[in-house]
Image (cartoon, rainbow, N blue to C red; front, side, top):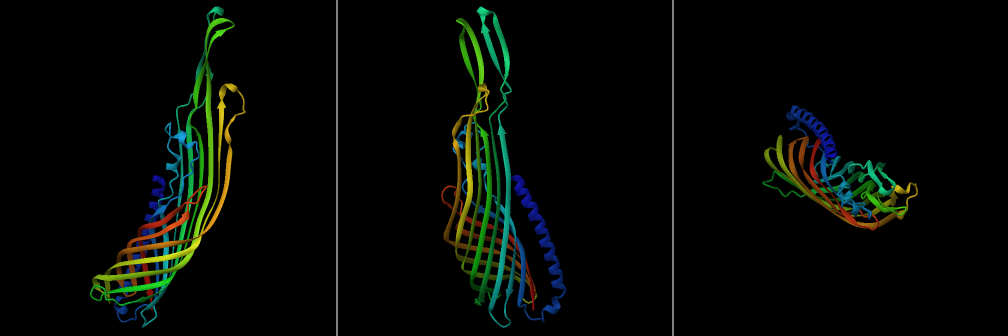
Length: 388
């Protein structure tokens, strides 16, 4: 997990640096033309680009066949702990806005996209049993000896987990500045209505291999050919377990959306440059379909080294299940943001924190349907450039 977070942090750092460099260039260009901007008309077209580092609520059921309970008695790490979905996602966003000259209306199209990957494998084992001692003692026949019998083996547990996740949110909206004069008139307040489309996908693979109860037993013989004897013969026994799961899950939906965006100037001159506090709320009702496809199987075999045979009796038959589910759903979505912006007549740099929650969006179950929320929350930064 630490390696994944480090990789995500490295990617995030590089993108934040790129964003910061672009911001600096935009600001320099803006300040260089500030004198002319005062006399120019306000921009009617705005292009915005940005990035976000989001914490994910991305739950789903863990693959845990019956033999997992035996792993915990040794103890080995539970495969459930290894199968934790990605916690962070890094993505990009963009927006195109149009505000007709002389009108309080504005129209916009926006898109956000993010993805995350998680790869992890754990392997734990006990010290190997390389050999065991066999003893043969028959005093009446003058027999006594010890022999090292090769019985290589040990207890072990291996869990391999992979998961790929992506999400895309697209908004089309028409809004109107209601002109509430927030905090003394130096601010805006806009209500908008439109359509939101959201698509979430995830693919996961799990491979479990374990022998949680390898052990050496001894068989004792006290007589041989009618004579007293002490014979001690080792015998290794084990249970080999295996499990595999592959699953893909998705949701795609579209529906009406509403939002309220507002800002209030903290310092500066709105005709030149200013710093504002920004905030907003949004909500949507998405009509769509949840899908879940997958396959999982488990095996278990019992082995005895002294049998000297490749035939291993089966503890229980191989179990293999393929599932496919699809269900129409209505998903509520609510969100909000807060942040600060450095504004110029034809440019803006914003930073803030955003939350978006989609309730019951994904079918995270294995054999039966079980819904999980898909939530995103974390910092974002954007650059906006206006054109007349």
